[in-house]
Figure 1 (cartoon, helix red, strand yellow):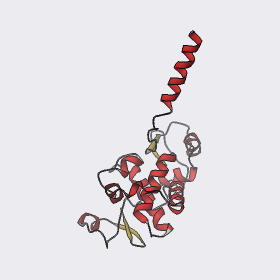
Figure 2 (cartoon, helix red, strand yellow; figure 1 turned 45 degrees about the vertical axis):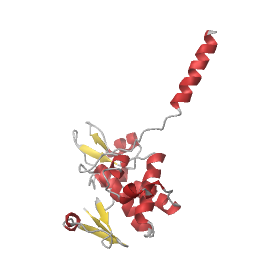
Figure 3 (cartoon, helix red, strand yellow; figure 1 turned 180 degrees about the vertical axis):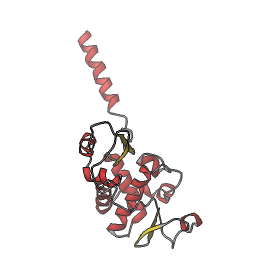
Figure 4 (tube, one colour; figure 1 turned 135 degrees about the horizontal axis):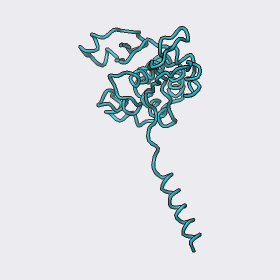
Length: 193
């Protein structure tokens, strides 16, 4: 009897555990350097490329110091990649592949910035910063090119020009954005920091 109750309890627990969605896990990461650590060891600990850690922290050599805060790349799970891919699809539909990578990069840069929430979900749903959240097009599936663009943006974090805004000047005007530094123009989008 006890064995049957125990097995039933385990079955109920498993059913409940797997019926709720996983929480978003893509957050901005930092690491406080400890004495004796190297960039290589830190990158291996977090499972991120050494070159990305160097690029994100403007380290052309391997010199780091105890107590120094190093930024680490955003590591995204499948649900976060899907969310970002859908945003890229909705925001950059009809734009070039490079434009799609740049849109994804803006979102990743915002996760790293102190000016915005520190998760992909938080950045994407921050008020109505992105029109697809407001108009519902973010719920449409992403195409393969948008998915590849997200993978590339994740793989090359830290190698961009630091853009945290983009807009299409034919569709939107903003005195605030016009006061920001233009980093590049790709297709119909102007990217700024």
